[in-house]
Every structure is written in C-alpha cells, then in structure tokens.
Image (cartoon, rainbow, N blue to C red):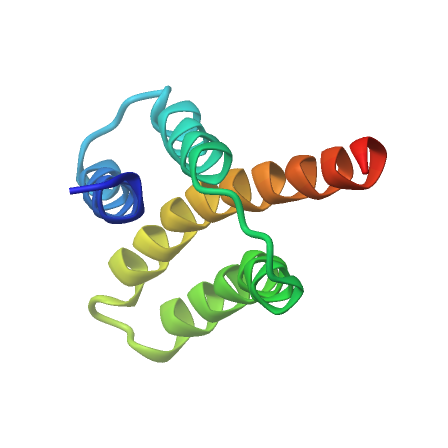
Length: 106
C-alpha cells in the first residue's frame, strides 16, 4: 500500500474515532495526515488542485447540511465530516505549499 491509500484510510478512521472518543489532539493528528499526504504525493494538475481547494470549502458546508437534515444521526455524520475536513485542509495547505514552491523555483 502506498501513501495515496494509507492516508485517506487513516483520516477516515481517525475522524470516526474522534466522533466518539474525546482527545484534544485529534485535530493535530488529522492535519498532520493531510500535510504528510500532500507533501509525499504532490498534485501537479491544476484541475486536481482546484478540486482539493473546492473540497476544503464544500465539505464543511455539506457537513452542516447533513447535520440539519437528519435529526437522529445527523450530528454524528456532521462531526465525522467536520473531522475529515481537517485532514482535507492539511492536504490543501500542502498542495498550496507545493504550488508556491514550484512557482518560486521555476
């Protein structure tokens, strides 16, 4: 297995665990997963970069809608998506760092 399979699985697993287990460093762990994934597997395609940035914006909005739409389990789904968004934000930050590095270095 490579980082492109391990990082998303780890992010989803930690996001799900974070819904039920209280630990103050879940956010740090999730953003590190996103950063490591983004730095080890850089995105060169502009369309894929735009998709990553769009996901960083759209997933929290979907989480809010999910939480409001389903009364019984919506809160769990909302928390799961919000936690997963932290990893997506880490990936987006790493993508932005890679893009800036490419523009500066040539």
